[in-house]
Image 1 (cartoon, one colour):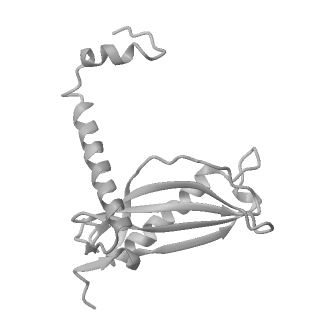
Image 2: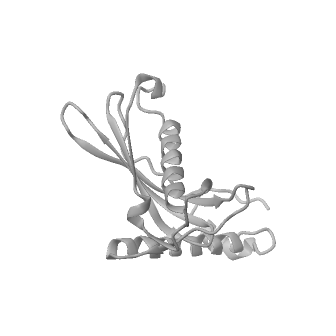
Image 3: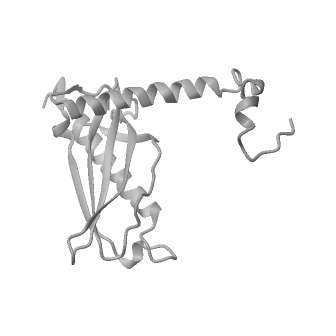
Length: 182
């Protein structure tokens, strides 16, 4: 089977639904954030692997904000698709929704972006198909990913040991609850 040169975001879409059990809960009776992160990682892996037709690994996770707690007995649905592709990397967007199966009430619990890298049979990074963007929403997500990648790279450079200059932040640090003793 030959691999496609370009694929649509639709070709990467994954929906995972799971009932939340008491064994998934933390000490306060809510579903453990670590369990949800594990489901998110599984969903990102599946979307990236489906899109690239290669085994994929998680390279990084963008920030995860837990917006609403998830209760035992709720149905959790994770929706994911590839938002961005590089040479061997992909950004997979994930949205987590919980539903009270008795009332039908739904809550948006969190969204996050996982950077995934495709690997060949020898564990080396390998090329992924290009992305066909056919609507405004997919274009917005693609451009948002570029912006996030650029900001991450800028932060990496600015705060590297080689480039960091503490004096540049004296005014900024006045607004924080710290005592600086350098």
